[in-house]
Length: 203
Image 1 (tube, helix red, strand yellow):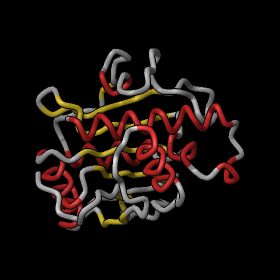
Image 2 (cartoon, rainbow, N blue to C red):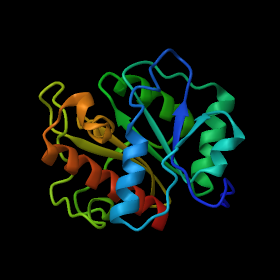
Image 3 (cartoon, rainbow, N blue to C red):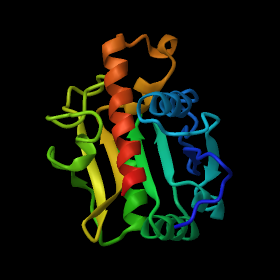
């Protein structure tokens, strides 16, 4: 896949249909980009892009991010567009902002009808990039008292979609005064986010 969105790379927030609040964390990708530039020596434009899931523009961005609390509905053409993007080498990160889970599972089943979400084992490289997470995802926000889990979709053994569930990385990336998370918790979220970006860009 060739990316052609200018001299510096942008992360991209996905806009989708169905009524879910795709725009829920407006400061997340900006802060993650800045953290990666400082700690991974990347050159990400912190003015992240917003792209519609059915648009050919998604092919201009190596890293797509989906978040929200509610419903997401994909048309046949949108599912096909996302499937082509992921098969071509793009990477999708999904962050359940609480309430997204039942909808995103149905949506991704439409993208890959024969490919289920699988829990990503703790020894997978995504947890061991610059930052080492020996027991998988950190717990950022409490929802239903469940452990944080990372799920993935694999194509020919390669992780192309990473889904953080009961974790809420996206909230953890937001400006400190949004959720008032302890600084150590926010740093765990940003470090795991940096791992995801580093994995996506190197694979």
